[in-house]
Length: 339
Image (cartoon, one colour):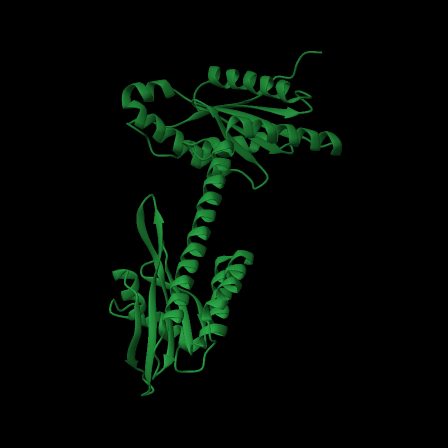
């Protein structure tokens, strides 16, 4: 038994700690709840949990017990020292019990510091450290040491679970983004453009509005690829995509539908004006491989040129053919069907 009159069996706090971690909505709440449960059984004057952050150097304080704001700031700054017991526990993967230290106030402090370790594919990974401290004199008995060890393992599981959930979420977001964007340019892909066009046409049909649709084709793109290689071609496509994205309104959608073809979906009747602004922005781009970058474009409007997506696309393609015949860097309106 310890010599400060603590709970006869501190391991009794473990079910509550496990339940608190399982019920918590986020990592910070989970670890704070764990320290609260530990505090009822072990009565530390202070306790803290630090974890490593892949995006930041050193250990980051994520939960504490018995520390005010100034104490947390001081402790967070002190762990930058590799010899600090929290840092040492994580770096050396070593547990230390009954470590005495003289506090700035002059009192003697006794602490216990444990690494947070999980096993991944048979390899032990250190995620941080947990530590608690008491005013001296203080000697931890076997039950208290077992409790601290179990709490460290539970904290490690909580951190690992949160990271796995974050990784899964990031992967899901990545796959979702890839399903809707062109991987080379980051613009909307053909499937996404098609869905947005249908939505805009439906809205315009209900409200009696207009929708403009433009198709852009990079002039002499095959010659750029042939002379400069695929890298030069990819550079052209990325520069054109950037110019498109920077030239449109917030309500507009730009996308790449394959090869060197780009499209614009623009609610309202300003499609021709927006297309002309895009052509000017692209014409101002620096040459690639000694060749200037220009595009030709065809623009069609709903409902003047067509009453559905297929008809609108066909009309814009007719306008593109006219623009190509007129020369590079030009834009032409689509041709409405006869009758």
